[in-house]
Image (cartoon, rainbow, N blue to C red):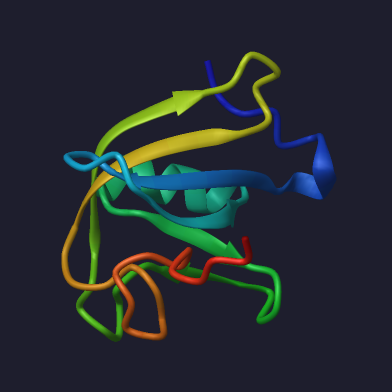
Length: 103
C-alpha cells in the first residue's frame, strides 16, 4: 500500500504530529521521491512547492523528525506521520506551525 501520487499533480498532503502528545506539528507535501527517502532514512523528507525541490526536515536547523508511524487515508491520497520531533517543527522557532489562533 502506498500513496496515489497520480492524483493532485504528484503531491500528497502529509500531516505531521508529535507521537507522544499527538499535537499537530505541521502540514507539508510529499512526492514519490520524498516518500521513498522518508522510508529509507526514517526521517521526514518533503517536496517544497515554493522552491521546487526536495527538503530534508531539519537539514540546516538540526530539528529533525524521526518517524514513528506512517498512516494513509482511505483514498490513498493523504499521509499522517507521527514523529519524535527534535527541537521546533516550525521554521519560526515555534514548536508547531499551528501556534496562531484565529478564533
